[in-house]
Length: 182
Image 1 (tube, rainbow, N blue to C red):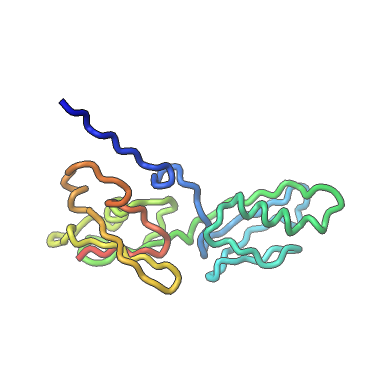
Image 2: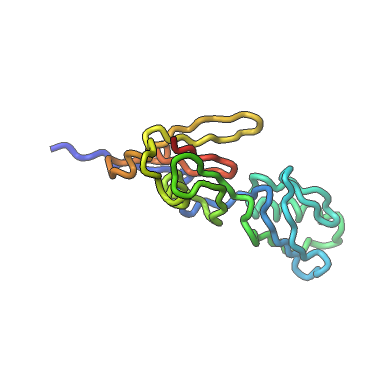
């Protein structure tokens, strides 16, 4: 009797526990402890930046909040004789994480779930497949700069409960993706 091979999923491919990366449209709260003049909410602009006093434009898109804490701390360093007070960046509203679902689904549209989802969860958020949906032909259209990429999705197999499906068959939905269900 042969043992079933164990499939392992690299931690970076799992949806749960994935660190949130900043998107244009997100609202951030920046706190500089002990300096109330520098505590504020900022909106990440469509170009992925925001302005912060004494630092200037900060490129935020695709970065972690901890990355922004380091950038702001480094930008404030010349303003302080001693160490810079603790800088904390948190996401108040993850409004920038949006995707669309179109085609033969019960509730097509653009969604802002507030958490990362995979293609199967995106289909569920859109109300599930319509009566004559071709789940075998489902695709994710992904933007990368000015280019579009087509990512095949195995929704039909997932809904039938067939086999083991990994992150390559049911990919995570990235901000700006469009799930197309023909």
